Image (cartoon, rainbow, N blue to C red; front, side):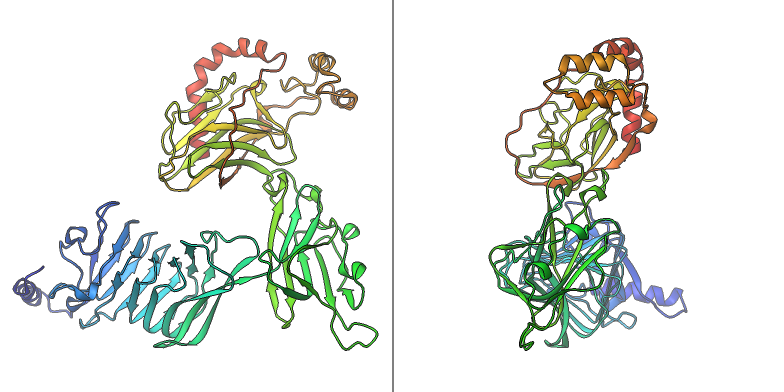
Length: 570
């Protein structure tokens, strides 16, 4: 606790040495990852807690996290709550347990304002946590991240204006909420604008959607609500093009119209099985079906024309044929359809869309088991690719590079694969010679060992270098020549067919090079992994000879080449 006499002396000295009016004084947060409690005085640049009575503003901008787990209003004077708080530069103010964050606007130059900008985040965890200010703004790119653990949640209370435009609401759940369910997240005199809603951390099951609204009520007159609602879902098989409607929660939901839209070329009107065709009785195709939009509306039902055509879904599904054009997805492009419907109240509702099949990802997929840390790489597409290198990145250092953890392709005995300098931040391998590229057929997986620290942060990213194999290049050496005919003869009737011979014949003389390869971003998912043995393949005929010829050059260039790829992938 600071002595009152010291405070008065400091103010007297300041008054004698400056004739200008007093203004706010920033007290900067300098706490670290573990020493991060608001009430620890050494975490602040002045060696004392920021206090509103002395016109001090708490400035949190070092990218760290500040924990508030007590009631700041109970701090013994002359210490006390800050006069204002600024949280920016991806820093985080986290109020947990029964923590209560308050501001003290008793100083002549502070007004109890809380400002979150530049990725600065306010996180409230649980029902007992609270945050109070005279005004609050998220409009400069701030984030409100409520961690909701039950039927009620801690409140942001603002005795003034709460500004939301330009901010993001990013809720998460520590339990499985029922549907429907709602929470009051904020209470203010005035709520200006609206949050962008980011449900990426919510972990919602299919057919559940979050919505925000501002309603009258509460202590100050206006409330920000978050509601979880059941919605209809559209399931699309990205491999076959089949589409079905359903109510995934089992709730009875009635629609009187719907629309499916996407990029031009993504839909096939000719194979769409409309409700107009299936049900008739008042259903009508709306507008002209196109490769980017399919729509239907329920009109009056004949012969009486006194009721509107509708469809109610609870259990079961309703097929819409195969309206998705699977050929519209080149490798690396994920499907992106939108689905909306009109409910029985005449409201337009944004439905949920899920994809099945390999093309649901349509890229290289890294699946990570969050419990065991085991991982596997899968070609989750319908395109055969030649893998020439990859990097797995973790900004938080949540990777495990040691032998016995990460099972690299080099560890698995793949010829011509070079590891880079593995660290907890990145794991990389490069395959300098195209002849040694690893061919991944659609759906093929490789176990990569326990490369993830299960106690770490789920922030992995995947980048990879690849090329589409040259048609007819059966030995994968970058040229279609007589050597490939030899391979075809030896494998005809087992892995190769007469159609493959025609492919070789049409492409005889064709070549490809590493210059035709691409670097792309893969997809990372966290889910339970069943047992998968580490895969290794015997080099194709011709590869061993090429490997021997290039061995000396590879040894000389191995570390430099692999490090260069790791750097380019960061």
